[in-house]
Length: 145
Image (cartoon, rainbow, N blue to C red; front, side, top):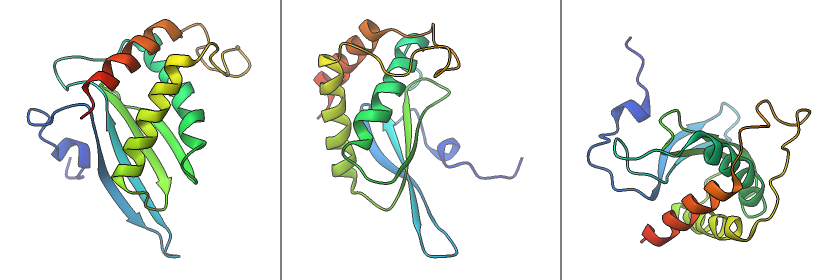
């Protein structure tokens, strides 16, 4: 395959998680900027987030980050389960995204209920762990520089 995939170009043996980095930028024909950020929470090839806490983190970050950053298109978990991709129209600074992420992780520590966890709202509603999400959030916050 000759298609360049940005994340495949990243040397995963040299990164130090947690971090936030700009991972891609597209300018549409009409001049809109679509920016992708790598929200890396766990060290690649050393650790991964379990699926139930990952799913819960996805639900909570989807809401909390949208409260602070306009024009978020999506927050998606990485297949390797070491973090998330944030897609946004516009170009918030890495510092803004990082501050929003750490604020959102702090909010998760105080969360008592996960939104959208019924069969009607979620495609795998039984696979959640608020306890686990809080454990990962706490650990990541301790490691953020």
